[in-house]
Length: 88
Image (cartoon, rainbow, N blue to C red; front, top):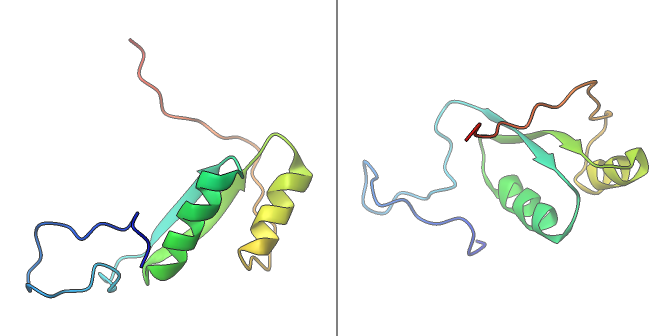
């Protein structure tokens, strides 16, 4: 398991695997296709309930190549991405 998947401090069972399914799937989107994105997508692949749903990049070719490397069989395309930011 990657060092990026930390074992949470609170589990219902003391030796519960943090990768175990919770029963609720969570779709993830990754913005950018660099080294950190590759690490995170690899970690997501280890989680039973995590789905890499979308990827965004400045270049369509880069996003397509990243999605293909993650095993996507369909285009991960969207017409808009809204990054949540604070308005301070």
